[in-house]
Length: 137
Image (cartoon, rainbow, N blue to C red; front, side):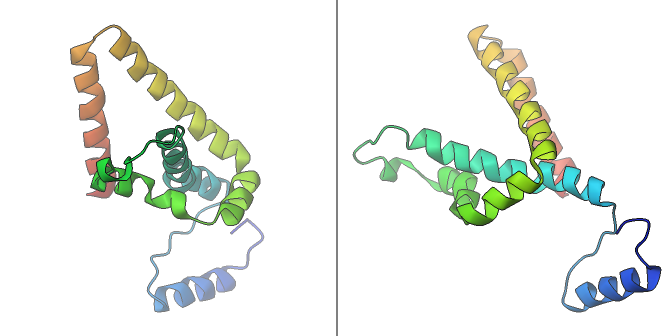
């Protein structure tokens, strides 16, 4: 809601969504866009780009080498391109910020690989594991 949203309407909408089984978190439109860019739109774009990169050069028999990791990591790429186009265009500023942060993290990993920085690579992997646990558990 925004500052002009009547509290009784916010309460009614909250109750409706709770009745259909949703968890409701009331936030500002700006915070919603920032959070969804990070937790939904960025993962979708990473999945889509990953599928594109893996499939960039047709390989005979590539499918049997794509196990559960590939399937899990690219599941989101199977979403509707039309819907996701509209989502990305309507939230482009927040999505761009998150893609820039991801690009920076990817560049950091590439640099560590180039330097054969085994400890640094280990730290990247440990931070990723810990971040996932902190968010989901």
